[in-house]
Image (cartoon, rainbow, N blue to C red; front, side, top):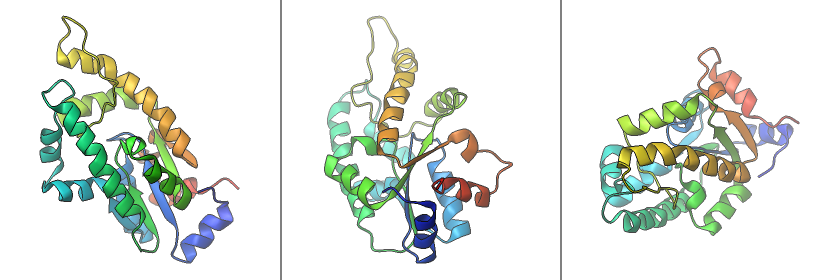
Amino acid sequence: MQLSCAEFERRYAENRLRIALVGMSNIGKSYTGMRLATSFDFELIEVDKLIREQLGHDDMDAFAAWQGQPYSDGYAEREAESKRLESNATLKALNSEIGNAVLDTTGSVIYTDKSVQKALVRDWYVIHISASDDAVERLIDQYFKQPKPLMWNGHFKQNPGQTPDDAILECYPNLLRSRAKDYAALADATIGSDVILDTSLTIEDIFERLKPAV
């Protein structure tokens, strides 16, 4: 939903501004959403939480363990189920009857049903938090330390003689590049993860940078 700066500010003042954050897991969506909710009184909607509720999982670790790795038995079936659950949860979030809201989407929002993506770009101001150059290594490291549910959408390939971890290390940057293009296609605006995570910037600074330029 393209907005002018004036319309952005008007909607916020009238308690009807809806911001959706898109980008990879661990890129700063949840952190930014929490800060906006705390300082600017947005209602924070976490799609991951809605999906876990559907599955009856209490935390992200349980969700990640259920989905498994792309080389594990039954992964393709669980990935397909995840897409279905995520489409349902995202649509539920998009249709929430609330005032100012910030939507913390999953990293795989770009794989939800096309009808869900259409509703997202029609009704929400979509901001892509892009992975800056130094963020890719951090994302890979965090993925291995604390795996989150991840849809590979055909981007994982394990070559003969290659260990699963080596295959992930090789394929993950390709997944990031592919996703970056899809996030950008959904977004009305882009802000770098280096800006979002810059400790010298206040949330007030970040909020100003989220506004349209004109």
